[in-house]
Image (cartoon, rainbow over all chains, first blue to last red; front, side):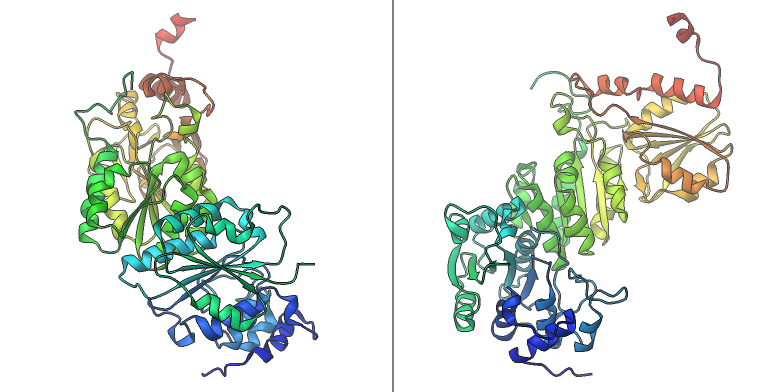
Amino acid sequence: MSVATLGYGDLPALLGRLTGDEKHSPSAHSTLDVLWVLYDRVLRVSPASADDPARDRFLLSKGHGPMAYYAVLAAKGFIPVDELDRFGDFDSRLGYHPDHVLIPGVEISSGSLGHGLGLGVGMVLGLRALGLTQPRVVVLVGDAELDEASNHEAIHFAGARGLGALTAVVIDNHSRSYPLERGLGGLFEVAGWDVREVSGRDHAALQSALTATSRRRPSCVVAAVEPAR
Amino acid sequence: MRGRRRGACAMTETMRDRFARVATDLLDSDPRLAIVVAEISAKLFGAAAARHPDRVINVGIREELMIAVAGGMALTGLRPIAHSYAPFLVERPFEQLKLDLGHQAVGAVLVSIGGSYDATFEGRTHQSPGDVALLDSLRGWSICVPGHPDEAETHLRAAAAADGRVYIRLSTQQNRAPHPVVPGRFLVMQRGSRAAVVAAGPMLDAVLEATHGLDVTVLYATTIRPFDAATLRETVVEPEVVLVEPYLAGTSSSEVARVLIDRRHRVLALGVTDTELRRYGTPADHERAHALDAAGIRSRIERFIGLPQPARLATAI
């Protein structure tokens, strides 16, 4: 069974099937544009290559509010569009936090904050040990999620080991309670990462930042969006 | 360093030494294996790291990352062995064990050292009598408690070749001689009718001494999860069961209740009782404090099965 892939303009309708809300603006979802650019223009992964050891990996560390993720996965043919209607049902594969055991194309099961970067570091090391130096591992984290100390273990280790295959995308929707002395980018910079700061709504800028990676240093893209309400 | 550390003198190879030696060999022969440590024991794996720099990873003093890295490596198809002191392997990164391994549905081998009170001089921070009970709460973990370096090797080789989640609990407390253990099975050391005594790992020597001359079955458990229900059912005569475990007392009581659900039975669960002893000294001192020495075990078994108490107890009053 082939699944027709859909475009960016179809996302509001897909989101509507998840939430039952007809009028969906992309800005209601902080991660939507980043996810779209990743799956549409950056990641070398498709439903056909979802089990290929050499595929790029995307890890949604910030597992809550996965509607935008599910909408993009449906648009790209990883999951049937009809499944979106049963979001959260007892026998649905789509929970309020994604489960990689259930959903094709989902790389990790997440929900509890602060697990994606550590798992991503392990994936980069695992791929390297297997001789797979091409695949990239992209981890999406939220700005407030970076409060969790587990992230800092991963950030400093990845910088020290120069894990160039690792990219962190920080969605900055200003949901932190406490400011950072050197900003979100500074957190990564002091650990030896390359940092780029772009608008989380500008597709061209996101694509450019997400593809301009070095092989010797991990890269961080801070994607700023509207403050969370 | 001062004081005497039982079982850790320079002449004998510890379970930890054996683990490092065998794991290093296994890395050479199995390209799927990887070692992940957080500084502790990193030097023991120096030769392995020189030969396999991509498969021996020291993450620094970052235990949450150690388990997360194991989980990420397992997601790519490797078989990681994570290793540290028990409190830093099981307690500190407990959510990573639950989520980065269990919830991701990937396997790994955890190898701990330190046990309940190997580190008597170090105090509570380095003691982990609750590790087995904690891991057991996650379900799905195989838990091995070898009592001798040879048995540690047997369990390590089996775990490395398997796919699931396996915890191997090493200790400087060990029995004098190895036994021909089979992973997953209890070994029948002696048969009797008054009770079945299950001795876990390093408790065996004390249990054999304690039960000398008593009409009881002694089962030797080096795999405590899954609990070998078949062997217990097959050997128990009177439905009286004594558990002697070198970690939190009662850790396996619910297993016995499950095995003997169709029989009226009694359980005496011996193990570590006071987890905040706030004492130093030697492991032997701690064994006595928890009444896990042969005398303490024997008097409690005799009371449990209704034998008259020895005269020395009467004269001590």
